[in-house]
Length: 209
Image (cartoon, rainbow, N blue to C red; front, side, top):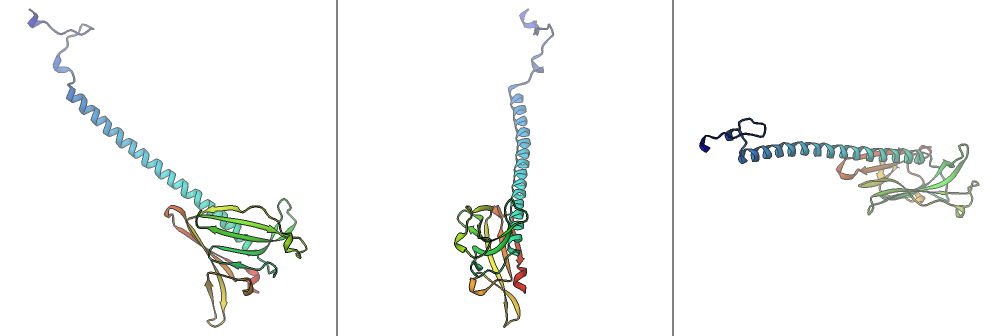
C-alpha cells in the first residue's frame, strides 16, 4: 500500500520528484547568473572609468586654457623698465608689466610678474609684485604669496630673438636683462597622465618697435 502512495504537496497537488530541480541544475543556474552579473558590472565599471578619464582630461584642459589666457594677457602687456628687466630660463621667468589694479577698473600699476614651474610638485605658479605708481621705488614692491595656476606634467619656456647674422628669428632657453626684451615667449606644456601637450607662443608687441 505504501509503495503506491502518491507524494502530495501542501496544496494537495501531486508532486513528481522528476519535476524538481536537481542540485547540479541549481549550481549551473547560479554560475550562469554570476557570469552575467560579472559581465554587466565589468561593463559599468569600464564606462565609469572612461567617464572619470574624460572628466579629468576636460578639467585639466580647462585649467591649462585659463592659465594660458591669463599669462598671454600679462606677457603682451610687458613694458620696458630698466629697474626690473626681463629675466628667464627654461623653468622660470619674470618681467615688468602694466596691469589693472584689483577692484579698480580705471587704475593701472607697474608690477613684476614672476612665473615659475616646480618640476618636483609639477605646479605652475604666478607671483605679482606691485610697485609705487611713480615707478621710482623698486624697494617699495609688495605682493602676496605665489598663486597656483595649473598642475602640469612638464613645462619649458623659451625666448625669441632676432639673429642679425642669419636674418631670422631664433629661440633660446635663457634670457638676461642685459639683452633687452625678447620678441616673444614660447610655452611648451606636457599634460598629466599622457594626455598630450600644448605649445603656445606669445609675442611681445613693444619689443617689435
